[in-house]
Image 1 (cartoon, rainbow over the protein chains, first blue to last red):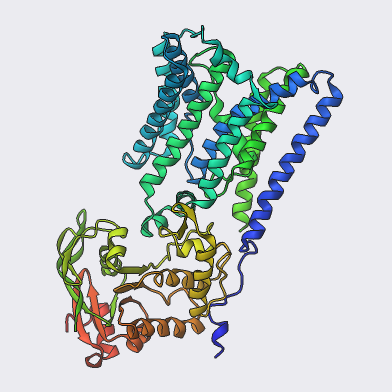
Image 2 (tube, one colour):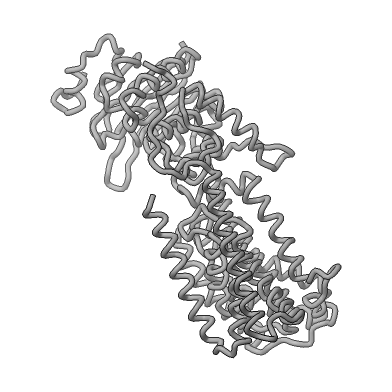
Length: 330
Length: 244
């Protein structure tokens, strides 16, 4: 008997090589990248207003905000969960930071406290999901309405303005020509990339999305890891809440309304699987750029803005449909 | 001979269902114990108690001379219990190396994964098992034998006191069965104990020193292999013979 041939079974599928899987991810990202390029070129040709510095900066600012929440959403999606509360957390955070600034607290204190609130919100979600055994969808859907309600309550449903100039200027400023908001995206991408690809925590996030019972049997700290995912997502939503408040010079509970779906759509356009264990850092950023370009293009072309919401819905259904086909194809 | 595991008066119930009733078992150092029984006899429940997945409803576990409580798989692993689960507990989206190292990933600089070390060690472990699985490949699409090799390679990362194996030969090709049995013998040579759960009487008869049979949550037989004959074991499993 040839010992070397033992354990060598015939290959059932063709995707065993991670280089192939990685290549697919690159190809998906590359396709989305070309999509963005095609949209930008088309819009530059058909409108006179798209290819202006002011407008491009505007698109990038919008996509920066969506990129950050999409990265948070991706971390949750990797665990085969979902965070539907992101939009409300953005709104609530913009209210908290605006209220504190209004009361005269320093910018740093206000921002740190808002981020701590975000972490707390994420911890509440994770507690319900791990200890209460609630499906992530239900827990964060409850969060969606709850945190929106809290935002309305603490502001009396009024917009909070009168924010300090230094705070407002941050969102319009730049360092060496790079907009601050885009620097924030880089500042989120780098640590997230390291966490996902080069730490035990990242490996645990993927393992839970891939086979949660199996991860449990292998002594993966499942509860702790899920807490991380939801707290990270809510933290990033809080940061975006702060940035939105700075950008609009306004804290209001309806800031970020329905952005959880922008985050899901950005993430899945960028190749994240809603079934878990597949996703990276670059995809959601590209996905967010696609959505903000559509948004901007629709405005410039005088298409009613409602179409953008309809299109987001269609994109989610289409992308997930193909994701499912891939899964069934195995 | 040193006793590694001594289970005494173990009861386990799930609601109204009594999965284990007054179960006693001791396993010595370097001993291979075969555990047989029909579906629902309580074999997997017993394995999961030893692996830290379930707490027994009552009873005592003595491990390596100390009374222990395994609250979770981590406790059991720390004490020196390694497990090959029946479903293998592999994560399809991860590479073979990351599966082997799952939850005890090699690190450098205190927090970054040491991909190189994980891949090299995994390659060595898979080579030892004559597996063609490559450490950098994701598990999706691997054959039953390659998957089994990865699950077994996990048990080689530490120096376990005992390896629990749940049906390790059920999902592999006929040609791979002897390799797994050889592996079990090699564990014995290195003085590791093995608890082997299997439906395949020939496998059990081939490698085990002692055979225990369970029926409806109770132990109905616990004898040295030399005192057993296959007909008796089969009778005990089916209930045709009440006890031995």
